[in-house]
Amino acid sequence: MPVSVEPKSGAAFLAFPEMKALLCEELSARFPSQPVQEYGDLLYLPEFEGADVPWWCRDAMLGPFIVHFSSIKEAASALRSVQRSWAPYQFSNFRRAALIQEQLPHINLKAKLFPYQIPSSPIGLYTLLDGNTLLASAKTSSCLPAGAIVWVEDHENPPSRAYLKLQESLCLARHFFSVELPHAGQRCFEAGACPGGWTWVLAGLGAQVFAVDRTELAPSLMANSLVEFRVHDAFTLTPQEVGACDWVFSDVICYPERLLGWMRLWLESGLTRNMICTIKMQGAVDWKLVAEFSAIPHSRVVHLNYNKHELTFIHCH
Image 1 (cartoon, rainbow, N blue to C red):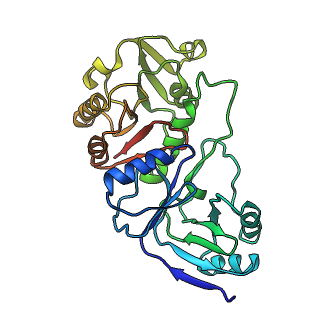
Image 2 (tube, one colour):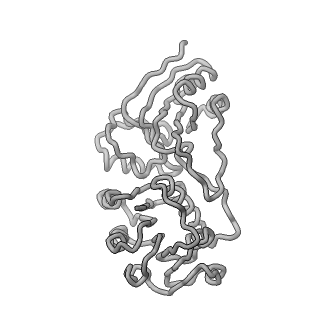
Image 3 (spheres, helix red, strand yellow):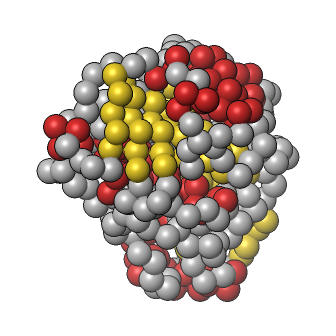
Protein backbone atom coordinates (compact mmCIF):
# COMPACT_ATOMS: atom_id res chain seq x y z
CA MET A 1 0.00 0.00 0.00
CA PRO A 2 1.26 3.54 -0.65
CA VAL A 3 2.29 5.72 2.29
CA SER A 4 -0.47 8.08 3.40
CA VAL A 5 -0.39 10.90 5.92
CA GLU A 6 -3.70 11.92 7.48
CA PRO A 7 -3.91 15.07 9.65
CA LYS A 8 -5.99 14.61 12.79
CA SER A 9 -7.89 16.98 15.03
CA GLY A 10 -7.48 17.38 18.76
CA ALA A 11 -4.45 16.48 20.85
CA ALA A 12 -2.90 13.49 22.59
CA PHE A 13 -1.43 13.56 26.09
CA LEU A 14 1.24 11.19 27.39
CA ALA A 15 1.13 10.31 31.08
CA PHE A 16 4.15 9.88 33.31
CA PRO A 17 4.87 6.30 34.39
CA GLU A 18 2.26 5.09 36.90
CA MET A 19 0.45 8.44 36.67
CA LYS A 20 -2.14 7.61 34.00
CA ALA A 21 -4.99 7.51 36.52
CA LEU A 22 -4.25 11.06 37.67
CA LEU A 23 -3.99 12.32 34.09
CA CYS A 24 -7.36 10.69 33.36
CA GLU A 25 -8.81 12.32 36.47
CA GLU A 26 -7.48 15.72 35.41
CA LEU A 27 -8.85 15.40 31.88
CA SER A 28 -12.25 14.45 33.28
CA ALA A 29 -12.26 17.34 35.76
CA ARG A 30 -10.85 20.10 33.56
CA PHE A 31 -12.07 19.05 30.13
CA PRO A 32 -15.36 17.21 30.75
CA SER A 33 -17.34 15.43 28.05
CA GLN A 34 -14.24 14.92 25.90
CA PRO A 35 -14.12 11.47 24.26
CA VAL A 36 -10.81 9.73 24.94
CA GLN A 37 -8.99 7.07 22.94
CA GLU A 38 -6.33 5.23 24.94
CA TYR A 39 -3.08 3.90 23.51
CA GLY A 40 -1.18 2.63 26.51
CA ASP A 41 -0.32 5.73 28.55
CA LEU A 42 -1.15 8.03 25.61
CA LEU A 43 -4.63 9.57 25.76
CA TYR A 44 -5.95 10.99 22.49
CA LEU A 45 -8.80 13.53 22.63
CA PRO A 46 -9.97 14.02 19.03
CA GLU A 47 -12.23 16.95 19.96
CA PHE A 48 -9.75 18.81 22.19
CA GLU A 49 -9.44 22.50 21.26
CA GLY A 50 -8.03 24.00 24.46
CA ALA A 51 -4.74 25.82 24.77
CA ASP A 52 -3.84 24.46 28.21
CA VAL A 53 -1.72 21.31 28.40
CA PRO A 54 -2.79 19.19 31.40
CA TRP A 55 -0.54 19.54 34.43
CA TRP A 56 -0.11 15.77 34.74
CA CYS A 57 0.94 15.48 31.09
CA ARG A 58 4.50 14.37 30.34
CA ASP A 59 4.35 15.40 26.67
CA ALA A 60 1.53 16.46 24.38
CA MET A 61 0.94 15.85 20.69
CA LEU A 62 -0.46 19.22 19.67
CA GLY A 63 -0.68 18.63 15.91
CA PRO A 64 -1.35 14.90 15.56
CA PHE A 65 -1.37 13.01 12.28
CA ILE A 66 -1.65 9.37 11.24
CA VAL A 67 0.81 7.64 8.92
CA HIS A 68 -0.16 4.43 7.13
CA PHE A 69 2.89 2.56 5.80
CA SER A 70 4.07 -0.82 4.53
CA SER A 71 7.72 -0.89 5.60
CA ILE A 72 10.06 0.36 8.29
CA LYS A 73 11.82 2.49 5.69
CA GLU A 74 8.56 4.13 4.63
CA ALA A 75 7.63 4.96 8.23
CA ALA A 76 11.01 6.55 8.98
CA SER A 77 11.00 8.44 5.68
CA ALA A 78 7.53 9.83 6.38
CA LEU A 79 8.67 11.16 9.77
CA ARG A 80 11.91 12.62 8.36
CA SER A 81 9.95 14.43 5.67
CA VAL A 82 8.15 16.37 8.41
CA GLN A 83 11.14 17.27 10.62
CA ARG A 84 14.48 15.93 11.81
CA SER A 85 14.15 15.03 15.50
CA TRP A 86 11.73 12.39 16.80
CA ALA A 87 11.35 10.51 20.07
CA PRO A 88 9.35 7.31 20.51
CA TYR A 89 6.71 6.33 22.99
CA GLN A 90 5.73 2.70 22.61
CA PHE A 91 3.12 0.46 24.21
CA SER A 92 3.22 -2.38 21.66
CA ASN A 93 5.12 -3.45 18.52
CA PHE A 94 8.34 -2.69 20.39
CA ARG A 95 10.72 -4.36 17.94
CA ARG A 96 9.19 -2.65 14.93
CA ALA A 97 9.32 0.70 16.72
CA ALA A 98 13.00 0.17 17.56
CA LEU A 99 13.77 -0.51 13.89
CA ILE A 100 12.02 2.71 12.87
CA GLN A 101 13.97 4.68 15.48
CA GLU A 102 17.25 3.25 14.16
CA GLN A 103 16.52 4.83 10.77
CA LEU A 104 15.82 8.27 12.25
CA PRO A 105 18.51 10.84 13.16
CA HIS A 106 20.09 9.96 16.50
CA ILE A 107 18.78 11.52 19.70
CA ASN A 108 20.31 10.95 23.11
CA LEU A 109 17.95 8.88 25.24
CA LYS A 110 20.52 8.10 27.94
CA ALA A 111 20.33 9.29 31.54
CA LYS A 112 21.68 12.83 32.01
CA LEU A 113 24.20 14.42 34.35
CA PHE A 114 23.16 17.51 36.33
CA PRO A 115 23.30 20.37 35.47
CA TYR A 116 21.78 19.65 32.07
CA GLN A 117 20.82 22.25 29.48
CA ILE A 118 17.43 21.32 28.03
CA PRO A 119 17.50 21.84 24.25
CA SER A 120 15.52 24.73 22.83
CA SER A 121 14.67 23.00 19.54
CA PRO A 122 11.42 21.03 19.29
CA ILE A 123 11.34 17.26 19.18
CA GLY A 124 8.48 15.28 17.73
CA LEU A 125 6.71 12.35 19.37
CA TYR A 126 5.31 9.23 17.72
CA THR A 127 3.86 5.85 18.64
CA LEU A 128 2.91 2.77 16.67
CA LEU A 129 -0.81 1.99 16.88
CA ASP A 130 -0.24 -1.27 15.03
CA GLY A 131 2.36 -2.76 12.71
CA ASN A 132 1.48 -0.44 9.82
CA THR A 133 0.05 2.66 11.47
CA LEU A 134 1.65 5.33 13.60
CA LEU A 135 0.32 8.37 15.40
CA ALA A 136 2.73 11.30 15.47
CA SER A 137 3.07 15.02 16.06
CA ALA A 138 5.92 17.35 15.17
CA LYS A 139 4.45 19.99 17.49
CA THR A 140 4.76 18.91 21.11
CA SER A 141 4.75 20.53 24.55
CA SER A 142 8.29 19.49 25.51
CA CYS A 143 11.80 19.79 24.10
CA LEU A 144 12.79 16.64 26.01
CA PRO A 145 12.52 13.24 24.30
CA ALA A 146 9.01 12.01 25.15
CA GLY A 147 8.84 14.79 27.73
CA ALA A 148 10.94 13.31 30.51
CA ILE A 149 14.41 13.77 31.94
CA VAL A 150 16.15 10.88 33.72
CA TRP A 151 19.21 11.55 35.88
CA VAL A 152 22.35 9.55 36.45
CA GLU A 153 21.78 9.03 40.16
CA ASP A 154 24.26 9.59 42.98
CA HIS A 155 23.64 6.78 45.47
CA GLU A 156 26.29 7.87 47.99
CA ASN A 157 26.26 11.60 48.73
CA PRO A 158 22.70 13.02 48.79
CA PRO A 159 20.85 12.54 52.11
CA SER A 160 17.61 11.72 50.25
CA ARG A 161 16.34 11.06 46.73
CA ALA A 162 14.39 14.33 46.86
CA TYR A 163 17.46 15.96 45.30
CA LEU A 164 16.36 14.53 41.93
CA LYS A 165 13.21 16.68 41.98
CA LEU A 166 15.14 19.87 42.58
CA GLN A 167 17.66 19.10 39.86
CA GLU A 168 14.79 18.61 37.43
CA SER A 169 12.96 21.74 38.65
CA LEU A 170 16.03 23.95 38.32
CA CYS A 171 16.70 22.78 34.77
CA LEU A 172 13.07 23.46 33.86
CA ALA A 173 13.24 26.91 35.47
CA ARG A 174 16.24 27.76 33.33
CA HIS A 175 14.49 26.36 30.25
CA PHE A 176 11.16 28.13 30.82
CA PHE A 177 12.41 31.48 32.12
CA SER A 178 16.06 31.78 30.95
CA VAL A 179 17.32 32.26 34.51
CA GLU A 180 20.70 31.16 35.81
CA LEU A 181 20.87 28.27 38.24
CA PRO A 182 21.61 29.22 41.86
CA HIS A 183 25.30 29.94 42.17
CA ALA A 184 28.07 31.40 44.31
CA GLY A 185 27.13 34.83 45.63
CA GLN A 186 23.41 34.01 45.79
CA ARG A 187 21.34 33.34 48.91
CA CYS A 188 18.70 30.62 49.04
CA PHE A 189 16.06 29.91 51.67
CA GLU A 190 14.77 26.37 52.03
CA ALA A 191 11.71 25.78 54.18
CA GLY A 192 11.42 22.34 55.74
CA ALA A 193 14.88 21.33 54.60
CA CYS A 194 15.46 18.08 56.58
CA PRO A 195 17.17 15.75 55.77
CA GLY A 196 18.74 18.05 53.19
CA GLY A 197 18.35 16.68 49.67
CA TRP A 198 17.55 20.09 48.20
CA THR A 199 20.10 21.90 50.36
CA TRP A 200 22.71 19.42 49.10
CA VAL A 201 21.98 20.43 45.49
CA LEU A 202 22.06 24.16 46.24
CA ALA A 203 25.28 24.05 48.25
CA GLY A 204 26.78 21.89 45.51
CA LEU A 205 26.10 24.74 43.08
CA GLY A 206 27.98 27.12 45.37
CA ALA A 207 25.00 29.05 46.75
CA GLN A 208 24.58 30.08 50.37
CA VAL A 209 21.63 28.21 51.91
CA PHE A 210 19.53 29.27 54.89
CA ALA A 211 17.86 25.98 55.81
CA VAL A 212 15.05 25.84 58.34
CA ASP A 213 13.33 22.81 59.87
CA ARG A 214 12.45 21.36 63.25
CA THR A 215 15.01 18.59 62.74
CA GLU A 216 18.66 18.97 61.82
CA LEU A 217 20.04 18.15 58.39
CA ALA A 218 22.45 15.35 57.58
CA PRO A 219 25.77 15.81 59.47
CA SER A 220 27.73 16.59 56.32
CA LEU A 221 25.40 19.51 55.57
CA MET A 222 25.40 20.76 59.17
CA ALA A 223 29.18 21.04 58.83
CA ASN A 224 29.05 22.71 55.40
CA SER A 225 30.22 26.35 55.52
CA LEU A 226 27.66 27.27 52.82
CA VAL A 227 24.75 26.10 55.00
CA GLU A 228 23.18 28.09 57.84
CA PHE A 229 20.64 26.02 59.77
CA ARG A 230 17.94 27.12 62.19
CA VAL A 231 15.54 24.97 64.21
CA HIS A 232 12.13 26.49 63.57
CA ASP A 233 8.78 26.00 61.87
CA ALA A 234 9.76 27.50 58.53
CA PHE A 235 6.25 28.59 57.60
CA THR A 236 5.99 30.81 60.70
CA LEU A 237 9.04 32.84 59.71
CA THR A 238 8.01 35.95 57.80
CA PRO A 239 9.88 37.01 54.67
CA GLN A 240 11.10 40.06 56.60
CA GLU A 241 12.62 37.81 59.29
CA VAL A 242 14.40 35.69 56.69
CA GLY A 243 15.54 38.63 54.57
CA ALA A 244 16.10 39.01 50.84
CA CYS A 245 16.80 35.76 48.97
CA ASP A 246 17.58 35.07 45.36
CA TRP A 247 15.64 31.80 45.58
CA VAL A 248 13.00 30.38 47.95
CA PHE A 249 12.29 26.65 48.08
CA SER A 250 9.79 24.37 49.79
CA ASP A 251 9.29 20.62 49.64
CA VAL A 252 7.23 20.69 52.83
CA ILE A 253 4.35 18.29 53.38
CA CYS A 254 1.42 20.63 54.00
CA TYR A 255 -2.03 21.40 52.69
CA PRO A 256 -1.89 23.22 49.32
CA GLU A 257 -4.02 26.06 50.74
CA ARG A 258 -1.37 26.79 53.37
CA LEU A 259 1.42 26.63 50.81
CA LEU A 260 -0.39 29.05 48.51
CA GLY A 261 -0.86 31.58 51.30
CA TRP A 262 2.81 31.30 52.34
CA MET A 263 3.98 31.70 48.76
CA ARG A 264 1.86 34.78 48.25
CA LEU A 265 3.43 36.38 51.34
CA TRP A 266 6.85 35.91 49.76
CA LEU A 267 5.82 37.11 46.31
CA GLU A 268 4.07 40.18 47.72
CA SER A 269 7.05 40.99 49.95
CA GLY A 270 9.33 41.64 46.98
CA LEU A 271 12.13 39.84 48.86
CA THR A 272 12.56 37.09 46.26
CA ARG A 273 12.21 36.76 42.51
CA ASN A 274 12.44 32.99 42.21
CA MET A 275 10.50 30.20 43.93
CA ILE A 276 10.24 26.45 43.52
CA CYS A 277 7.69 24.66 45.69
CA THR A 278 6.17 21.21 45.75
CA ILE A 279 2.37 21.18 45.82
CA LYS A 280 1.68 17.99 47.76
CA MET A 281 -1.84 16.71 47.31
CA GLN A 282 -3.66 15.77 50.49
CA GLY A 283 -6.27 13.32 49.25
CA ALA A 284 -8.32 14.26 46.18
CA VAL A 285 -6.87 16.95 43.95
CA ASP A 286 -8.56 20.35 44.22
CA TRP A 287 -8.29 21.39 40.58
CA LYS A 288 -9.59 24.93 41.19
CA LEU A 289 -6.89 25.44 43.81
CA VAL A 290 -4.16 24.18 41.46
CA ALA A 291 -5.48 26.66 38.90
CA GLU A 292 -4.81 29.45 41.42
CA PHE A 293 -1.16 28.43 41.57
CA SER A 294 -1.03 28.27 37.78
CA ALA A 295 -2.59 31.73 37.41
CA ILE A 296 0.23 33.48 39.30
CA PRO A 297 2.17 35.56 36.74
CA HIS A 298 5.61 34.38 35.63
CA SER A 299 4.88 30.88 36.90
CA ARG A 300 4.45 27.32 35.68
CA VAL A 301 2.83 24.33 37.34
CA VAL A 302 4.24 21.02 36.15
CA HIS A 303 4.43 17.38 37.08
CA LEU A 304 8.03 16.22 37.21
CA ASN A 305 9.39 12.87 36.18
CA TYR A 306 10.44 12.49 39.84
CA ASN A 307 7.14 13.68 41.34
CA LYS A 308 4.55 11.29 42.69
CA HIS A 309 1.13 12.47 43.96
CA GLU A 310 2.28 16.07 43.74
CA LEU A 311 2.93 18.95 41.36
CA THR A 312 5.72 21.49 41.27
CA PHE A 313 5.31 25.27 41.17
CA ILE A 314 8.10 27.23 39.44
CA HIS A 315 8.17 31.04 39.55
CA CYS A 316 10.94 33.17 38.08
CA HIS A 317 10.72 36.90 37.44
